[in-house]
Length: 263
Image 1 (tube, helix red, strand yellow):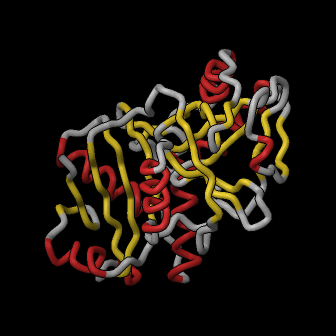
Image 2 (cartoon, one colour):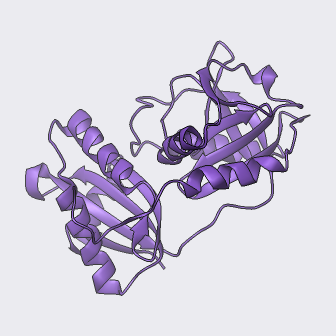
């Protein structure tokens, strides 16, 4: 069951009518475990930056955390899939902060098959509420026999997946496709972790034709990491060392407790 709170109290029908009828605002999602979050600071930075870009107003981290703590306390929740959405409303500054709590989730363990499609999200740097194209391309990919969609730009360069970033591994270097995409919090955590481990990384344009064996690839988002088995029917390497390397990189990044004071 999903429970929704608005500005620190249980959401009413009136609170949710606007977001339901108008596709406006921005959000972030994360996995909460024992009232702690990997990259919590990155999620707070994302919400503040998007609020400044869309509403020309700052979103103090204390406001977000106060709303999150109130929702967790009211429901005695320690583990959850959390979505924090910022929408125009009657709250302070002319917007509301919605906190949604759903059961915790983990990524599918099976490597996924993806289908490339030429598509670029509008305002890609913002995790905004205009998600219809993402899920429509995901649906079309599944109808075609794949598991998800991989977006490429008109020049044929990979940018991102429907709701995930993509990384490549050639056995020595992690490659991050450069392009017009949402830079995810899990991607940033992995990049920081690889830097700690001394694993070489590069960010460069990547054409979809590079996505085949002996190259390996993975998808990553706040839910976790998942290996990519193929792109458009072309098999990728399933390097058995890669999942462990991703886990080691992530292990260098400590979860942040939502009850800790904001630094």
